[in-house]
Amino acid sequence: MLVPLEEYVKTGIYLGTRVVTPSMKPFVYRRRADGLAIFNTDIIDEKLVEGIEYMSKFAPEDIILVCKREAGWRTAEMLSRLTGIRVFTKKYPAGILTNTALPDFFENELTIICDSWLDRNAFQDTMNVRRKVLMVCDTNNFSQGADKIIIGNNKSAKSLGMIFYLLARGYCKARGIEAEIPDLDWWTSEEDEEIMEKAEKVDAKWGV
Image (cartoon, rainbow, N blue to C red):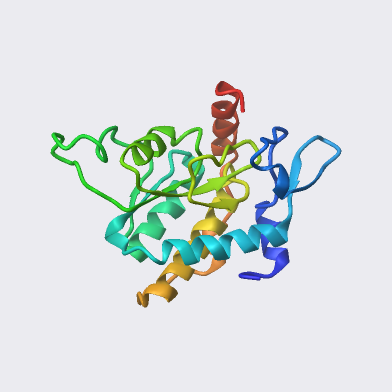
């Protein structure tokens, strides 16, 4: 495994939601008594390996990562600083991939989507220009349109931190980028309960 099993468990990366889409059903191991779906940790690791290998085919300037969920902002920005990949967190400027008349228009080859519900504008823009998509999928996400997926909890700061840590570490190694990557504890430090409450409210708004 990329990290010991207990590290995956500590971050809650295996914890899904009560909603399981047909796309995600093959990756669910079981349900807990409270109804939460549980991902198979072996498959989580397998998909992360595949995701790292896939994104490593692209140069940093050809990749963007979009993460509107506040729980992922801090670690997404660190991934950007380490790899040179452009990251959009608080807001994704609509049309920057599709409207050539915009002053900040640019072309990319790969978009990393952290939640197809929250990041749907970036996802749709990428589909419109027929570029590649690497998508992080929780149990309530649909994976249609993605060229490659990573499965896992995309609501939790600890889980997203784990994902971004492994992507940054693997990408830098594969591309020969020399970077001082903070240890795993930095990426998975205690998350703010208020941030988690906001995440739950956003998901409730969209009925997911």
